[in-house]
Length: 279
Image (cartoon, rainbow, N blue to C red; front, side, top):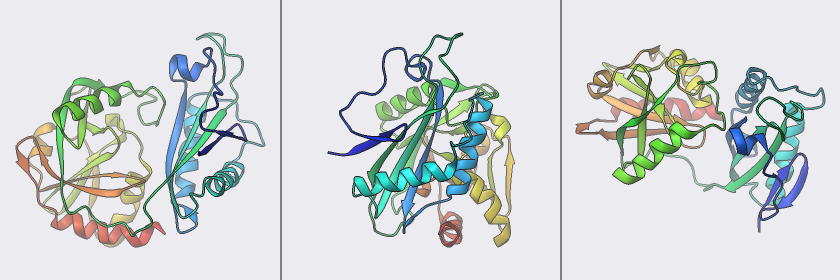
């Protein structure tokens, strides 16, 4: 039996804590962070909590003075110990508004749930079997004020994930409403052409991934050119290499998208460059 934290108190997994009037349930009114815990630390914690706070401000939460990253990190540590996940773990921190209708929320205070799951303790390596991706054409991601947030209204990614499972892809590439590359269901996407690394700009509607941001800061320090830009389907399919990133798996190289095959030599160099910068 595992435990979760709801507004500062621990409950067993089967205990219900949210009712039918929850705006999180009705409208997806909230945001979340998925973080990795390894070697006694939450990896890139400052970046995760900075993004969370920016998201709460964008969604017009009223943030109490006592509601601080230090408080949440302390409660995460307590939950990791309670669940015996304190070696390596995946952490999900969800923040959401409470009860109410669309125009009459009870208040705008942040409610939250913290959950943890164990991760393998062995060192992370670049995947030896490349991923097979497909392009999802059934949904489009909007390029609006909330597009860069990891918000709970996740339907475009849900539909893309269902398509990926149906087609037996490892993940699906999600397009924006301009029919350009946005991101994937659980990761940001990068492509490489002539040893220059490209990723969709935030204006293209992708999630502002923590690992994405870390790479954009880190790669130029190691003389690797990286740029944010508009990426078309043709650009992606004509790239030399493709990889995807998130905070749990770091980098995964992509072997194929549709009929296009990719190599991974420069991706391996990026992975070896990235790894020492995480800890």
